[in-house]
Image 1 (tube, rainbow, N blue to C red):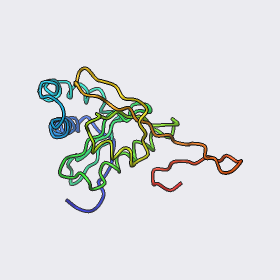
Image 2: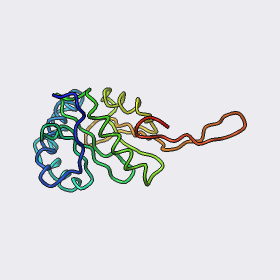
Image 3: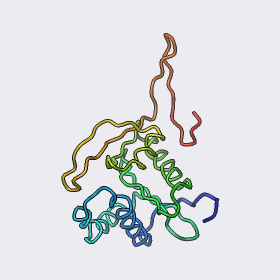
Image 4: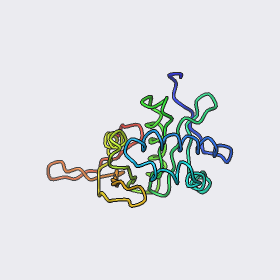
Length: 176
């Protein structure tokens, strides 16, 4: 795998098969460590993922390396609805590159971004916290049998400096 960053582009109808394959493989790899197989079955063996991708692909951005989809992010309003990176390219900046794109899209029209992550997904929670996401609530999801964590990241927040208040703005490059 090259050290150059992936190319990001809007997903197309032609990407649907690659996105479904990436999602199903990632579901098994990541969720399989904490979710009962019978809970994953509708997603992995059924048509849940295909139906989701068919419905959501216009809201997706894909990361491409050597003509292969290696990552995907879906944005629905202010919500980052899905983020998957192919296992063999994790920890190489693909997820961060996709998140930067998703956040820049969200923050053009919303004051905060929101996402959900399964509570036992320590790698995911660590990644999102490092990007400034904070837990706002936790709930039990009956379909998966696992707790989920809802997280938010504000675009702008007032910062107290003595008796004056100024605004601190997030930027996708981290400068700001």
